[in-house]
Amino acid sequence: MPTTGNSKRSLDRGSEGNNLKKTYTTVKYSNDHGSITFGHIDRESSVISDVMLRGSDGEHFFSMDKDGERNGWTTSMCPGNFQVECGSNRKKDDDTCMINAKNGNIDIIATNGKIRLQANSIELVAVGDNSEGNIVLEATETISLDSSKIVMNSKVKTKIVSSGVTDICSNSCLKLYSSIIRGVTDAVAIKDSKVGGQRFQQQCNQA
Image (cartoon, rainbow, N blue to C red; front, side, top):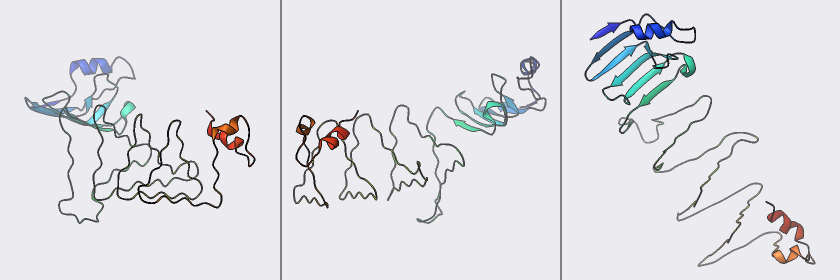
């Protein structure tokens, strides 16, 4: 059944100060399955939603907020699975699904689970300039790479550092090429070698 205007409680809270939101044009349609409200005021009276779609479960809702600390926000929440599917009538090379943040970051977080990306091919491209344009991988335990080919190419510098053990193993052929190849052991920390190496040893042991 539809109702118009705010409840007495909402109007009373709205009259307590200028910081509390108030509206006199709210329209709400509801039954035992859920509700849709135009002009919903949140519990703290700080944000008005243009549209609030709510299910019978309090954690199941869709809100289009218009002002306050969530000005222009769109929030969807559900206690179960959230699924998005598209592209049934598109071609393989079409850009079918796009998420674009014109400003700011995109955060995808699995609080208690895994994040999986699966496709025929996966491309990671960083296009920033100067100090940006970086791709960073961090793991508290292990980063594993497993494929038929691994190709790495850098234009300026390639560096592999381990505070523990580093193993390089090739069961067929191991090739090393450089204009100059230098091997330095930790012995140069006490007495430098004839061709130097102590400075390199110090650089590699910096904290």
